[in-house]
Amino acid sequence: MAAALGGLGLLHGRVRLAAAAAATSSSLSRPSRRALVRAGAAALPSARRSYGSEAKEEEELRVRYLEDEHKGADLKERAKMHSSEVSSFVSKARATINEMANLPVPTIAAIDGTALGGGLELALACDIRVAASSAKMGLVETKLAIIPGAGGTQRLPRTIGVSLAKELIFSARVVDGEEAKAIGLISHVVEQNEAGDAAYRRALALAREFLPQGPLAMRVAKLAINQGMEVDLVTGLAIEEACYAQTIPTKDRIEGLLAFKEKRPPRYKGE
Image (cartoon, rainbow, N blue to C red; front, side, top):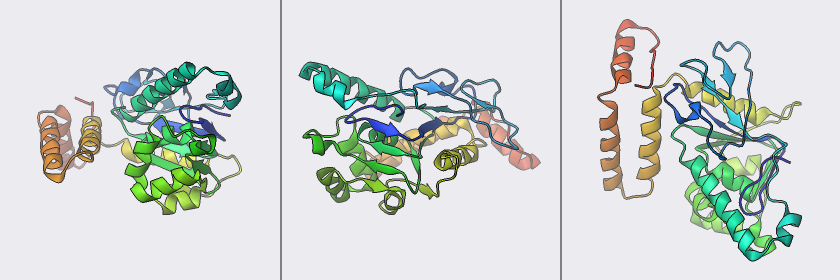
């Protein structure tokens, strides 16, 4: 059983959350309080970058994930809680998941096992979700006469649409990776491998695609998208304009132009 947060909080079978950034200016160069519970290293063959929980070089991939030893909401324990304790627990879980959502770098949830209740809410707070075809996902709180309490009622409709989100929450239905991909809950579905980490490997491959880009541009792009999706188009375009303006005076922008002119890879520093 891995980390579990929010509603029911079932998240196991190597469900990992990876956050990648390409410069030490990223907030991932320091641990995020509880949003990423345990740091871990991921080795990729033929990769020259180093992989681990803390930055050692300027262009390093940082990966943090939730490990199996970290357990969350135990339903037997929850049954013994006073109503005030339950409210406090869910409030803290909600704050943790919101912190994950607000990380200023790309985040990827790799679901190789089961993500139910708070586990799925945590994954929904990531920018991208990848799952094995055998993975199981769902917001199943209504089975226990409660509702998703750590963002599920808000993030699931924004991800798959209002009507379908209502159907899944009202029915407490659990979907596998193939169905999750079909309804837009995840971006990629992969066949599970013998090691049981196919989704995690796919997530790392995606993170590797993000690494060459300018880290400040990535941060501002995420901000523009997230804020723009909450407003009308005219306001969203104004947000994009304001965010674009932040990239103009940066050293990275000049480096990008020089690298293009000199036909070489850019060396971004997050400045």
